[in-house]
Length: 405
Ligand SMILES: Cc1cc2nc3c(=O)[nH]c(=O)nc-3n(C[C@H](O)[C@H](O)[C@H](O)COP(=O)(O)OP(=O)(O)OC[C@H]3O[C@@H](n4cnc5c(N)ncnc54)[C@H](O)[C@@H]3O)c2cc1C
Image (cartoon, rainbow, N blue to C red; front, side):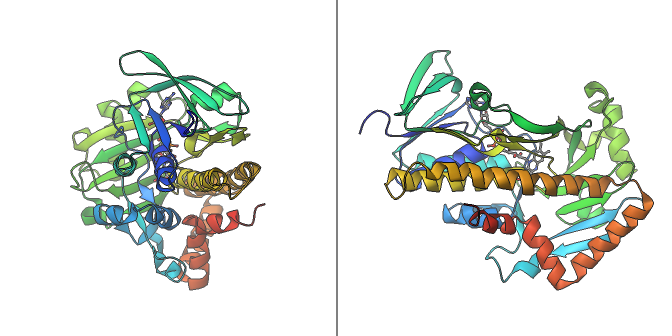
């Protein structure tokens, strides 16, 4: 085997680790370079949709997720002021379309950990944790990547192709000079995590969106580090609010107290603040280098689509790499990766997530009323509910992908 007979994956977050698993399961050697020594436990993605569960099942990961995650067979919309339940979307309406008619709440660090363990079981996997990529180059034969190891020493690896799964601030995307078109919202999102059981106190499901013209919020239950079951609440902030105020005891109390007057900052386990982008990279492929996951597209988290679509990217590109590797296809198939995933990220992912945000924060009373009536009708009519769920679970988007040449 010549030295560059491998794929290099930059970034072993959930997308990079799942991509690596997909490659080694096809018999393709992989080197993964990941800056962290172990997956960070910050509260980000936790909802895995039906379309993604189907893919993770094909990689042998779905059974563990089902066993350890929290089933979310339905999700709820409420009105904040009246506390009225506006709509409950029940996934039973897509039971004839998928073996996974539900979402599963499972933290992304656990998915990364599971994929890492599965990757390490393959002797063609070379996992280098604590390794930060600093530079790269490519020519007509392959790619060369430079990284710094945990001891500060610099190394060089060579491969046939490079998968850039290194997140929103991707070193590879920036190094390629690929622009991310789109915008950043003025407000940031504050995530407060607590052990307070919102199912018992307020009848919330494992996934809930609460509409309000002044301060909407979302409530999710996730398994938690010790599988004890914890709750995340997500709030918008005002653009002018300072980090230190938002994250202070007083700031945190103000937000959570608005939800339940018996709660304050002492009930909060973690406080996290996120910048919210809607951006898509102009190119998903530059010759031998492919962008996937947050390196390729960023969106607001309402609907839980960022990680899911990142995994869809990596299954698409790793299948094409397999086809080229084993000479079932020529390299021009890679351009189709750009066309398929770029189009879906631009037309589907951006519009759905912007729509989700606008619906929950709408200020005009007449539009709020119309939106709520529409949600109710969509959730109660089996045909409309199915159409809604096919879209929100990304089953539609995955099926449309094949039609994009
Ligand atoms: C509050 C919140 C809630 C969310 N909820 C959901 C949800 O429910 N469902 C959903 O689908 N999405 C959700 N998302 C989005 C989701 O978290 C991201 O889309 C997801 O993390 C993308 O995964 P990734 O592997 O592409 O990038 P990342 O998770 O950012 O991983 C990138 C990896 O690359 C590594 N890296 C970076 N630079 C280098 C380098 N130079 N060298 C080596 N390694 C490097 C990093 O250490 C990291 O491990 C949410 C996001 C937020 C903020």
